[in-house]
Amino acid sequence: MESSSSTFDQRVWSEVARIPHGRLATYGQIADLIGAYGCARQVGWALRRLKLPSTVPWHRVVNAQGRIAMSLSREGSDWMQRELLMAEGIPVDAEGRLPLRQFLWHPDAHAGA
Image (cartoon, rainbow, N blue to C red):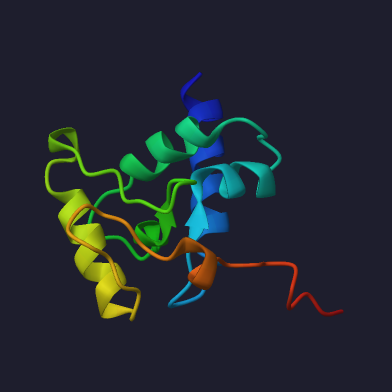
């Protein structure tokens, strides 16, 4: 079971690594892109298993409502996420809301050869 979890995690991390600077993706979008339709929550857990700091841009993944999940259970990573997004030029209000539609990543839009 451990290997299937780590394989899922690696697929999530590889896909998230493709999100360009200044762009956002949703948990569900990442799940769909790796062929795990309906597994948005599992994508979130895979990202929570990353050791911070990480080269994987986990902070670019938000919920489908265009919000950062602000929660005590995140042990401050929600505020870290807010700061990292703002540093990339993505405005985030104090409640974690952001303009998802404006900054949403469209991975197929630039697919070439």
